[in-house]
Image (cartoon, rainbow, N blue to C red; front, side):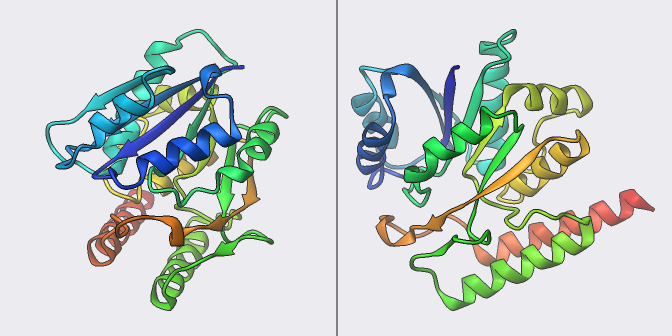
Amino acid sequence: MTHCYLIPIFNEAGNLELLFERLTANILVSDNFFLFVDDNSSDNSVEIIHSLFKDVEYHVIIKNINKGPGDSFNLGMEYLLNKYPNDENIRIITMEADNTSDIGILKDMIGISNLGYDLVLASVYAQGGGFSQTSVFRKVLSFVANMVFRAVFDIKILTLSSFYRVYSINLLIKIKKSNNKIIEQSGFICMLEILLKSIHQNALVVEVPMILKSDIRKGKSKMKIFSNSISYLKFLLTFKRNQL
């Protein structure tokens, strides 16, 4: 079983060394492939990646224009589909570079994926999940947004926007065949988009509880609340028009 780690990067120089330490403490990095997509960072994130991962199999896709995490995930997934065109055993793990993903639950997520699930989600809203350090405003906004979109799209899944997931490559192949692009949305709403596309493919989806560890992240979240809220609203209106 091959595990590919797809990690978008944007000015994460202060977080990459700890990310590498946490990965090596929880997995055998020499048995995995790491794909980073740099979203036109202005710091030395790419140089740090080359230094840290020089002894393992990795690749960095460098973008000359900042287009957002959705664009990065789409580029990375397209790259992996081309790299492993005939290997049904591939698992693709997507995660944040800022150490908010709890790598301690990674083995459980991969183990559950190997039971036949197409998509395993790390969930702050599943029983046992939560936030270690997040403002009340962000918690309320996240909760309300999840509740609204779950109602509109009739989704039973609790956490809709987490980057931290394990995909089977077969699921991404099915999504690619049924759509112009795996992911079309460039912003953070990309995670809801690909989740909806996965559900449309009758994917077997399961959630694993996770504590979001914002307290160990260096620097602020890259998510801009106002612009992200606007993108969610536009996505909602577009979906409703397409259903008419």
